[in-house]
Length: 303
Length: 278
Image (cartoon, rainbow over all chains, first blue to last red; front, side, top):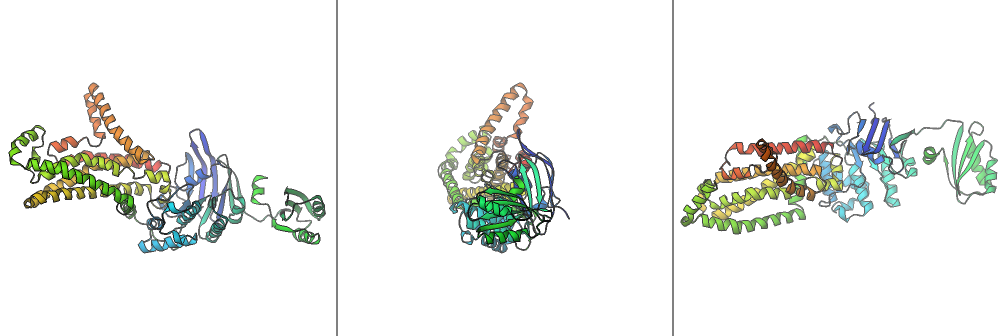
């Protein structure tokens, strides 16, 4: 099956600044797909997005999307994008513009209007169809831009910071929307919110200073050494740490923050370690907020 | 997501882009205000210089004077036209419309580019569709404005003398066609400058500065080598004076230079726009 994206030795420089440096990766088709693109500010995430969406060309190297070059007409309507800082035209209403985009994707007049209403409904903004972009708040503009990315049946959706600047309820709604639609299209999401990416993404690309430093593929950890993150209601103390250290199979116990502990244990020695941990917490009346198995994305990337 | 519709053809996509731009002028408040301002300007031109001059020209007492003057400046063919209103209109419009085009066509891509709106459109339409669709829209807009003003000039002429309408038909067609051909390279030049500059004002400024500057520069260069005068063909409007003076309106050869310039500017714009970061 043709990979979604194949990048080989991709370089992009702006004058003397190298934004992308020999970036190579292959993103295979997945049944339920979302890929995270993470990295510090200025790492080259938006540049990579721009090259994939054919907003700009690479200085050198090859990139193909579904087997085609990014500027190929075959990809029109197949790739959609939420670009950073792009605004709709203030002269027209939201409905007129989304309907125009739908027509460009092949919809007739009536079905373009239906499609406009459908995508606005997805982002819970049906009421703005006759409003102009200038009358919307920043968050609403963002949700409308997400709606335009969902017009038609794109196979690849590039979302650059989709929840940045949204209120918590809207951000949650957008996450849920991505999760619901990720079996119909592959999403690539650039975000600094690692817990959000952890919820949504199966594959993670880490860019640092223009270089792709890690490509993590979500998989079950079958190693003997396993990890648990424990979020307590109150701060941990020495007494609690002493109790937990007595658990059989425990290898290391690291307080990451005052109320968050990272536990490493040997699963061959203690195959039911998670259950023992819960029993221990119950017996000592220790209130917890969350237990999660495996390393968090943050731990995987930065430890 | 919804069912997949089939992608529109290149021509239909191009037409959709043009149609959207026509809506921008004819169906938005800003566009209608622009047309209103244009109509008011032409109302003044028609009412004062054209109407007054036509009145004097149609006076038999001044015919000999005008005949001698028109011979001196190669405009005697205009005296044979049945309506002097159309003759004066043609003389004024041939020089006013290129300027009008520069302003009307100054924002084919610039605002959408600086705002990022092109990023939304380019996901659904090729850059060629975008570039040529916007150009086509400006051509249709220019043709509409020409027809509007020609119709107004004709109405004014008919009000004075309704008997020669059929005789004027040929002039109406020639005026409309020639004005459009004159304007094409200016629209294409604005299209090109929109691919280079991110602002419509900058595109207008560049046009207003570049044409006379390059013209003077080439003029200076010809002092050393007269053959370099051929370089003037790269500038739009070079044929204007000859076209107006020599009764070349009905000759298809008069259209060759502006059409070649239009194709040249558009080809250059296409090369730049296909590589430009959006």
